[in-house]
Image (tube, rainbow, N blue to C red; front, side):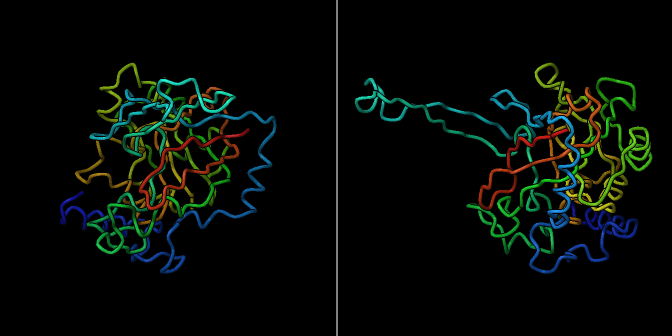
Length: 311
């Protein structure tokens, strides 16, 4: 994705500047066979503690509806076709006249609310834990780092309301969230980011879908390079936002999707995109039980998701 010189500079800078990026990022601290990265932080104890956050049982859907008009990173698209196989011209099956509908999906998995797996982003074709695409890539499904390997995520979720912080309904594109902004919002909300958390940013950006798709796809506010290193140093499992790419665009430098590189290949930290955070922000729910069991498409790079937050 990046030219060799820019990539090597980005990796060197990230390695030198942050304890979150190991001196040799191609080696997982969980061993040479590790394929799940920061999901190793998930424990039964964390799930139990997350359950203790539930006070009134209100459930929030964090996924957005998806159809043919949902804007997506080019050239991605999505279409669903509903069929009644073998039923044309008859009144149904058997004496009970049973009829049914099925559906066929044609499209990309990375549309709408989604989780980026560890096989999604690399540095010069090297991915998490030093896996080279030549060794594990296959058009029929990745031989390693597939989304099917990711365990269910049941842990504490933290919402950082950046729209409220900046006093706006929709944070302006190109606004970066780095250590200063993250710490200020966390302090204001009275939350602490901990190991094993899932951290979500609310920017109001997803509200542009269907209203100003051109602006929605042209840029976005989001996580900066320094902020990504900070969150991975905390040991978070995943970072997400109500934006299509999580990180700030235009980028902070000439490096392309450097935040993705810091999170996925360098630290094994998952990315959640197009999260519906509006209701959480409206109700000022800043910590909650986060639950995600993604479709386990074997060898897939990504997966459409609808995680839930429970308060």
